[in-house]
Image (cartoon, rainbow, N blue to C red; front, side):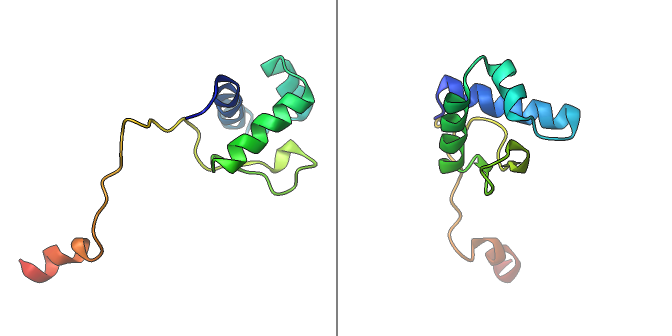
Length: 93
């Protein structure tokens, strides 16, 4: 579950990239979030650690790739399918 800062940052990245067709610069993130560079970098590193984004070149925010643009709901669990269960339909029926 994301903190409010991380959730806001992820939504800004997602919406900005969808509208502008590019990632925001650090200055644009500072304006949109109202936070300083250190706080934004900490939030981006937390998003990367939780596999919401990929940020290989940490010198520029334009290198960010969004993997998942919304917070995962811990109440919803994805059903696990046992190995081979998908093919079982075609072989048994």
